[in-house]
Amino acid sequence: MKYLLLPSINSPADVRKLSRLELKQLATELRDYVLTSISQTGGHLSSNLGTVELTIALHHVFDTPNDRLVWDVGHQTYPHKVLTGRRERMSTLRQLGGISGFPRRDESEYDTFGTAHSSTSISAALGMAIAATQKGEKRHAVAIIGDGAMTAGMAFEALNNAGMPHMGHVSNLLVVLNDNDMSISPPVGALNKYLARLMSGKFYTAAREGAKTVLKNAPPLFELARRFEEHAKGMVVPGTIFEEFGFNYVGPIDGHDLDALIPTLENLCDKPGAQFLHVVTKKGYGYKLAEADPVKYHAASGKFDPAEGFPKSVPSKPSFTQVFGQWLCDMAEADKRLVGITPAMREGSGMVEFHKRFPDRYFDVGIAEQHAVTFAAGIACEGLKPVVAIYSTFLQRAYDQLIHDVALQNLPVVFALDRAGIVGADGPTHAGAYDIAYLRCVPNMSVLTPSDENECRQALYTAFQQNHPCAVRYPRGSGAGVEIVKEMTAIPFGKGELRRQGSRIAILAFGTLLHPALAAAEKLDATVANMRFAKPLDAALVADLARSHEAIVTVEEGCTMGGAGSAVLEALAAAGLSTPVLTLGLPDVFVEHGDPAKLMALCGLDAAGIEQSILKRFGAKPALVRAVNH
Image (cartoon, rainbow, N blue to C red; front, side, top):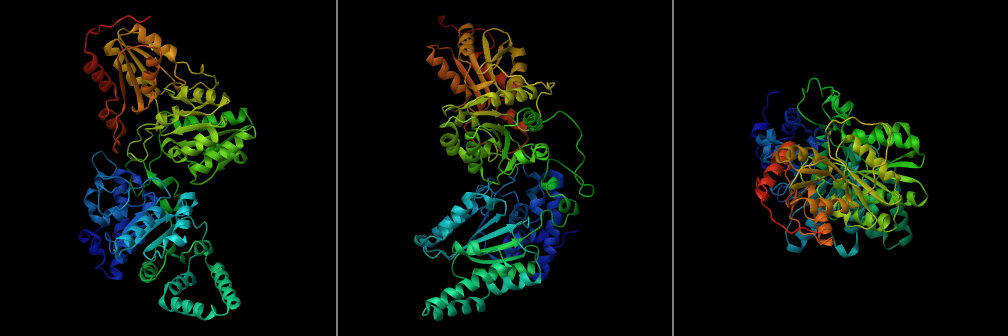
């Protein structure tokens, strides 16, 4: 497509100069540009194609960046990035040194709040609105939140807070519900568009407030009128619940119709009080392949031809996610007590087949990680065996529930922690860097760190057999490609294993970094232990290796502060051993987005990096002198 308008748009100020007809042309060009860009870089697709008109309308009506736009999750902000001066950098999207796939405050003044986890936008926008009032500044704060994110308790906590009397008159807050599933909306058409414009207009507001003034002198009539209005609106719009929170509800309107969006937003700008606009969009809008299968086209993992769609996947090594999915089905077949729980990550966590085969034992609780964990605890109380499939980064959101509701009661809940360690293009918001550190300090909790696909299957089985809470962590993508044994065999609990006997240096590997550790050990003639458990730690093996080697090196794909390496140091201190220890893992920084292999190399966690770190610390030849510990 030849772009006529898009090259002239360098900031939202340029968008605000365009006529309605030009804005429609801009929407066509922007959608094509986003699709073309993603086809070259990969990234989230369906959600971004669905927010083109909404993004244009928001930047056209509001004085951004003075007015604050807060995008929930933020995976739908590619059109926003293009319109806010980052068009030429879209070719670097999600690449090392390039722009992020999510909003980041340090990337642009138009990214007012960093996001990537869901359901935070209303809280943040409310804070900005209150801050503007406190500072005497006139500006709007707009939260754009999806219907999926509205399932989370945090979103309703924010709505409830906004309506509390002590918050005062929040007159500069607008919540835009981007409903792209039509799960709570009636059909969108001329009647709804008319009603939305009517309810956001000055005449309706004046008539409504005037009637209130008159009827307040006759309380029975006022209550009757209030109830009539509530039920009349409830017949055509699902807004009663939002009105009860203290918001003026408007909608639903077609989120792809600029002729409906722009006048409605303009009306809402001038209205007092907290406003709630319900727009209906279609994921993948304008790209027929994505419209037909928005789940498949949720995100592109790499380059593709827009005319052909995503290439057919070539069977290769199974991913850890697939290993988990197969184990879950096999285990459910063998043990009818198993139930599977996910907080809205059926596809991402590999539970599609389980859902098909065991629908009565599958529970998707929505984007509600806290509820997922306590829900699992309740199930465990009744003698069933819940398996919670959750990304490492998302379990952070349910830490209190994990401690208070599961671990404190010592309930046998299995946490299958996908995306442990570096995740690549999604960046620091999705990295599973902290689970070993934040889990191993919790009493009754065990943490298993399998090194390959088969060991992952057996580790999941081992965890399932326990009568206390266990977490099994595994990374994104595939592993070493080892043969997966269908028969499930328990791993000796809390025991590591020697994988290579060497001299002088002993490398203790936790998880899939066993394989680069083995490669480095070949160069150094080092001993390598596959530890398999971060908790309980095989303290006897650690002590034996400390006594028989000059130095210990720990390797983990997790944060070094408080991680498995720290556990080894604690064990040595408890045993009264002073063997030097080098802890290798993720540094005390938020690791940027980029190619996972490159990021691992930058963190010194590939074979070459492990070798160089050991040589730098301990030298190439035996040179350590220490007392023999007995």
